[in-house]
Length: 282
Image (tube, rainbow, N blue to C red; front, side):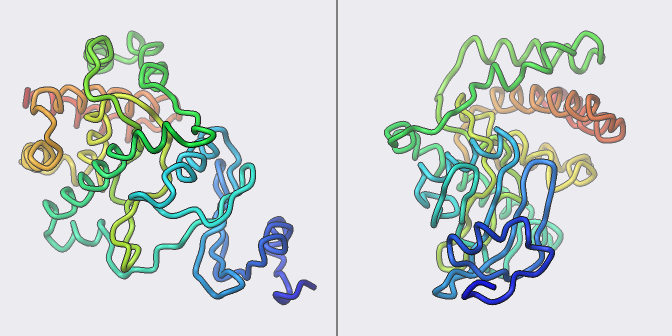
């Protein structure tokens, strides 16, 4: 038994980290193929989240959070290898709920502000010692390029647009890579902060495409919704409208490809449908 009290069987695999960092379990763990998340409290009683990464992608995101040092993102309290102890979001607000309550525009502006805060920290991230590993967008799109011809015209068009964008990059910054309503949380006095970055680098317009497909594909496909939120993103981000539309078409093709490769035809089809709507707005 540690000086923090007994560790329940559900937390046994994480007991070494709990003892090492003197943490007390404060909720049920969440385990996925890529990581384990365990709500904890520090010895001083501060709410925190222990994240143990199981993949290179998750570890890369943790390294980016370390470099950001709380700038627009959850602050890293401790880290060692693939283990990261983060401040925990304890605010009552929720962007998905905000959309459901009829405040879609407000949620989109909050997400855009979060993205811009991260992008503004690019120099800080690149000057970190050591700098975190970041993946370029051409690498990120590799599965779309490899499978577009096999999947259909939507994917082929998306791949062609992605290549054109990548051949003429603008405003290259550090990117979150998965900016959506579930990855920007209410941290109380610290405001809305990002979690779970993918750790990419490339044109900033890319980061705003995914949020237009969220908080769900059904919501994104509601009549008139995509056009309205695209206008909000353009105004809030400062990205050129045509350029933003192209990034959305490219992103939807990539997202649909991933769903297809994961044997999820329903989401592959709905992601492609959002891309079709986006192309019609060009």
